[in-house]
Image (cartoon, rainbow, N blue to C red; front, side):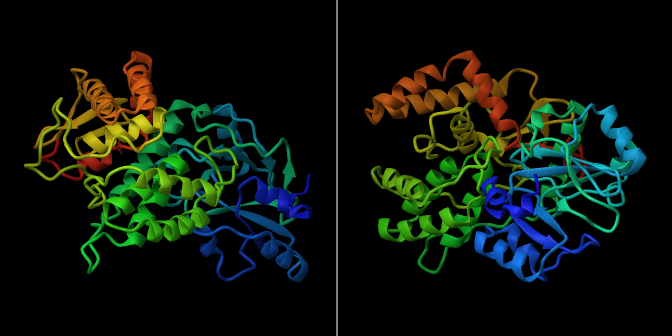
Length: 408
């Protein structure tokens, strides 16, 4: 299969693609815009007609729902065999690419030069993800790219545990380097719409419908009219990634976005979102993580009725005081001075209390479907699934904790 001969089929996978030179460098000067917006079929056809590219590249990361593990040379092939991974593509140099579904948390594009530990532990491996791209078709200066199996990405969970942990830690390190920005109110006293949309797009890889409902709810709670929110929801629908929470290519229609607006405006406004929570946890002296939900006015009714929606409820109530440490596979809680290891099942208690809070509000709202779901969600398996879904939303790495010697 040569994807360049059928541009529509490539875009149908949810990939963002662009033409490249035989040297692997982009043929177009502004490829980075496609990290944020979708490539159209018309653009691909125009490039194919006017540029006649020898190779094509896919933009990796959230926009395409794709991570590419690039195993280069003999060392890379040996690493791939050691990890027992099955390649999708053989590259022109004789290396291999393995496609992995985007896992829902950010990991920067990595390579052996910029990540010393990557080179030491996974020789010959480059990770192409947010901010990167990878050649997937055609002939470059070294040879042809040959497809070895269908381009369906493997689940992130299929990776060996040590590699999953490494990528998750890199994601938390990247987040730690970003200074969180407060969602400051506009001159009319409400949070600017572009900040709310940006936050919704950040949440979208974990579930576009959930993020759309969150967007509509926050617009409502910030005093935007339903007509204003309809216009903003259309913008969100046009910018959201073309894949679902499982990493599978799937369109997100304007109709779905507008349905979220109608759903939000059928309920009374609540306390609005006011700022993006700091990745490093609360400041010293903030409220401790106890078995009492930390945000009494948090919205717990607007999320979807699934594990991800339940995770969002827990995060809305206690996300400021909870982090999951992938290095030790344990939850940590903020006690006002440090992130202590949860050795008493406190995270589990908070998850149960979050679902009890949801059930109470569902009863108060006389929402029979919500009441039924709330009762089911108090099941041990669903509480456990809630916490598992929340892990990648609240990651913390040793690097984050080591940056402040007094937080441990």
